[in-house]
Length: 605
Image (cartoon, rainbow, N blue to C red; front, side, top):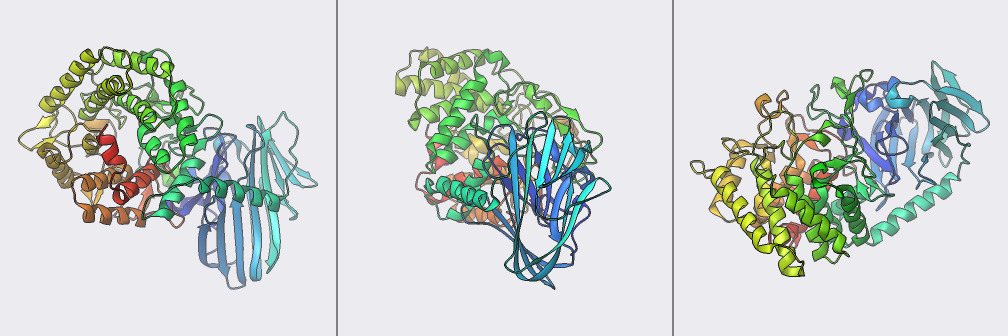
């Protein structure tokens, strides 16, 4: 195949991730970098072709002749990507990576073109478009290559290749022979600063490989699936904003949950509900420092008046995540609108109080240092929740339809009360434990009365509903009821009857009267991992293992998972790669491999 002239030809799963723990880029299997926000994950992109086409910005390095085969891999236990192109003329290896940044206001991408066999004609094509593909920069020729400036953005492309400008595009045609290596380095810095000095590319490669391998060396994997677990951990680390410890849900925005649909959201923020699952994934694999930093980010983010606690925050705890649309971007595969920011940050979602309380409880249980300030935050949150838990909300799925009494939200309010009681009983904190025990029982009775359909022998999505919701799979995982309780077993059966698609789990049956949006989306991969965890707790180990192996099989060629998957079209959907999917992979692998994995441990809190 010739090099693509249109990024829309690539599917979401055709990309690989490179990153520097400040931001990340997506590299297509055609050799094109089609997404790069600067200087942080949530910054404006200077390559945005994944949300439109090449004119929205990309950086291509690929053979000029037909490509007969492409093979990709990460160098073992690193985030250094290798793409091998085979053509009639020979083979060429493209090595892509992002060195650790020299400062918070710099970004660096290194691409090494290495001849493996024969002599292959190649093309470099750099289309720089600042501010999410909107602005054509002022490009000037330099001794090292080119510089480009637009507003606050300045970029330098360093390469020995002879560069030419054509139609607001920088191009170079060249030939690479066996044994040759040609470096290309892109540097970003603020335009009012001085130009950056380009580091030696091979030295940067060695430093980057060493960083990742030293980080992986800490890893303790008690699982039969070391390779996918380690790849998921590296992905989780790559999605961590290292200056604060916050972990973004995904490095992208507006990749569709249905091709051509409107379920396109910005996920470059940090969600509170990811806290406990993420802490487990880090703690059980030996990453106590990362777990501590995530817990500390969480404490800083939620500090303040509990009535103002949000469900998500920016990388440093920012609260204003206002949502707006970018009309000049046509969207991935025509999926509009493209959104920046996320209006869900203004929603009421009761479940996050339970997640925060559980995360602090878990940290305390695993010996992450805690103090009186942490407990004071927890106490204030629970005192606020005492008057809030019966209010309708938008659920963990952030529905844009009417607020309701969602069963899962009430369950997580029970978790908040339960963990507060246990903090008093196990760690001796001075608090009104008797009052909180009464609250815990009141919530439990309320859920079992109003959130349960006795005729169907199943809990339901919201009070008065007939349908189910995959969030109900969390009930045994958080310890609300044992997995073998007949009501939980009945709920699992109802989910199997209503929400399974080719063995994978949908979140719920999408309908405008529930979530205010047109119906249709893929199966939600985190829910499918929760289902596997339930099968483990129910003693259905062979089924759980088979489902887990199927989930591993739908990873792309470099081991990455998006938020959702279309089992009929066999393609990944939603923002990519998705932290929550990889957290689920890590935890389920341990649930299947250990006598006491995260599912049993959390349920026994």
